[in-house]
Length: 156
Image (cartoon, rainbow, N blue to C red):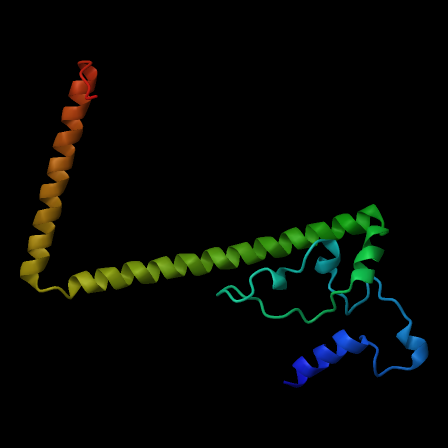
């Protein structure tokens, strides 16, 4: 609650509301420690997945338009370094999400397997027989279709 009130005050009165008047006029630069450099580059990844399972939470750094403008005048090598850092960070995020998806799929497969094992033996046998019968029918239809195709016969 205190953080929300502080951020609201920052938004209304400016970040330096409690500072000396001389410090209040200080403009932020893109390479200041408390400025979100990814925001200055293009966008902050923390803003990307809000209200999802992959939510990164609020960014702890400042998103400032003046700092973003100062980034445009930065040297090319500094921009490239920040772009490379962003690509590495995004790659790590992607790997984490892929890992979570893989774990979820494993859990789902295990749950389905456990559920199938909890069936009474007569239903297990019956379902296996049905699967075998359907597989046999499918294979037969495929071979018939291939034969008809090789003979030049086709349905309209």
